[in-house]
Length: 273
View 1 (tube, one colour):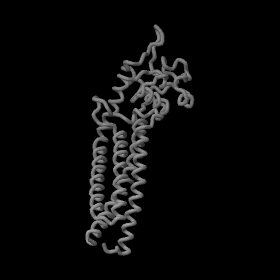
View 2 (cartoon, one colour; view 1 turned 120 degrees about the vertical axis):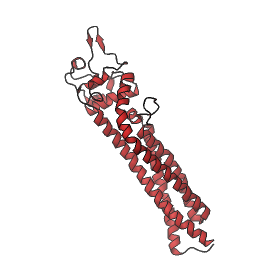
View 3 (cartoon, one colour; view 1 turned 90 degrees about the vertical axis):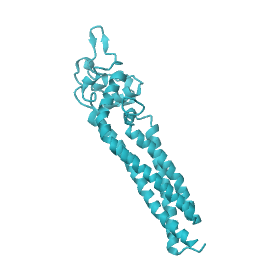
View 4 (cartoon, rainbow, N blue to C red; view 1 turned 90 degrees about the horizontal axis):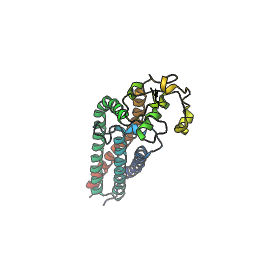
């Protein structure tokens, strides 16, 4: 094979360096995706999985889906970037063609995933509120010492955002797993997490925290009973989605650079044969 010109050599090594960049971005995407899927310290984690594994809400959890795409897509990008490095260094047109073709396929799949997420976003926002309310009715336990993930997430959100219920305290009236009875003649009107609490103490050990007003759960005094959590929860979900989308855009941009460089070298390697 004839020796490449200086310009083509530069193109070859640029592709090699770009693939190193893609490798690092792909590894970062995998790390972020694994973190989003495996982080068990985040008490709001169940709220990021809205729609997953439930027959009542058929839109797969937007954030969880994004994280899975990050892990799978990023892992494949890491493998393909290695193929690109080898094809460039060995000046092999077949490897370059395979590399570019696979990368284009991955890019199309990633774009399709983003489009689907965008299409389902409006449906997500429309149905998520109903899903959360339904889960409160069927799952919420109403005790600060709970270990049930959804109940813990709702309590965490209510204390963190200073709110009560998705719309207000009436969302808990149909909670079948919440034992509202305190004594024969006394029942709770709102869950303890709707009351004004010491946030620092709650986040350290929620089970040992008591409302600042001992009668809060019965009377609603010194509480957030009429403050909606919905906007705060939606903002939280959107912030998480923005992080996932930002990393995904970086991956797509790097892939485009690799495809352009690979196509140029592929054409050159064929002509050099």
